[in-house]
Image (cartoon, rainbow, N blue to C red):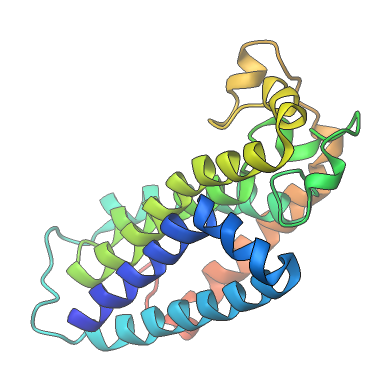
Length: 229
């Protein structure tokens, strides 16, 4: 369990204390944007891999106690939340946006806010957060709470981190983009600052739905847990 805790801490710290802070800006001044992105990606993959292997070992650790009973009462809402997570994350990955890596160049375009970006500036991160929340509800064990809790915290705090990073880099140009969008899903639409367009995202939602179905079907084989069981 200690290895999982250490891996989770490292994964959080490299993102929250480096990626979205002025530490990143200083490193980029020395290395350049490309080398920094390459190095940070390698470190992130290494930390994520460590966390995944540590989680696998922690599942059989005596310290992996269960805090609530796993039943349909917890799994059924989780299945719905995971679906919602897919419907945010997949369209987010399939839509270019000023909040994505190297996406700052499109911040001045009239259609900078389109698709799921109309719903939230950070559709992938919100999708990851909702996905993680679903898994927390379904799995009340210590190892699961550490793993999925780490992802949930990182995803939610990552939205503010990215906003800060883009604000420093783009200044007033990003401020204009922020006035047309919202971090929290649907807030800009509810306030009349943005409109919803199903036409721009329908096929991306369809891809997300299909991927959710595939993962749900193969979940017992891939992860050893049957969400429908």
